[in-house]
Amino acid sequence: MSQAQPALELVDVHKSYGDLSVLKGISLKANDGDVISILGSSGSGKSTLLRCINLLERPNAGRILVAGEELVLKPAKDGYLDAASRPQLESMRSRIGFVFQSFNLWPHKTILENIIEAPMRVLKQPRAQAVARAEELLARVGLADKRNAYPGNLSGGQQQRIAIARALAMDPQVLLFDEPTSALDPELVNEVLSVMHSLADEGRTMLIVTHEMRFAREVSSQVVFLHQGQIEEIGSPEQVFDNPKSTRVRDFMSSHL
Ligand code: ADP
Ligand code: MG
Image 1 (cartoon, rainbow, N blue to C red):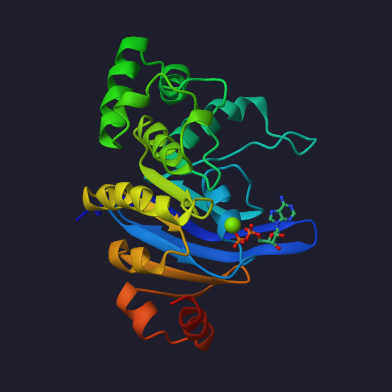
Image 2: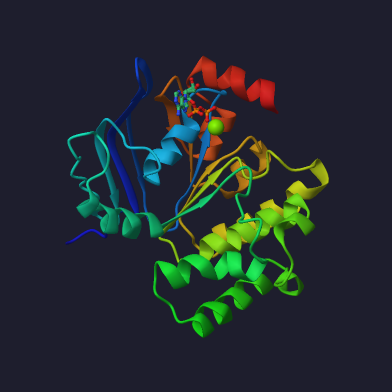
């Protein structure tokens, strides 16, 4: 019987910056609907891992497959990306949504323009179709009335909900979140977590770097603990939070609860 392809698969991914080895062989699989939380101390490689998956960084070795498809880049002689690889890079990247800690909305575009830009440019959606979908998504994140506002006029929590709507507009196979609530005032954290919770409930495939332990425990199908660029422990939330095998994980948990 043929098995469905994992939504995302990493095979022995390595990444260094110069002499600094940051990812030392990460293998990980996310099936459709999996929510994988990634925990670990500062500097353990969490952001680098997400950036490699989204092809913002190029791994030095290893494979990354999205629904079974691998991006095979032809490096140019100077080490930069070969022009022929660009369309495939853009197409692969459009299948992976990325939500940053710092929102990264375009400040000079309205909220609506922020959301429709990539669907129109990358997916070649007609404007009317992109606008209709954006309106749906704005309603979904509870911000229908902000379509003509500019990012600078919104709270951090609202901006992050817009960033999520913008990612969803591409209908990505996998959504990546890099500490999506770390830049927010505490009273704004829950409005963002509750949108993420509803995405998890509807079966979205997500990888979430977060320090929100209670949230991670509630939504995750798997929890990964990174330490110095390697997976120190991986398991169900119950296992990793309540009964970690690694003393390092145990210490981390007790200092974060
Ligand atoms: P985390 O997100 O877990 O805090 P990062 O992935 O941001 O960790 O960083 C892991 C290590 O890689 C750190 O030592 C960091 O200083 C280093 N690093 C990250 N990005 C770069 C870069 N662009 N150039 C050089 N070193 C980097
Ligand atoms: Mg980080």
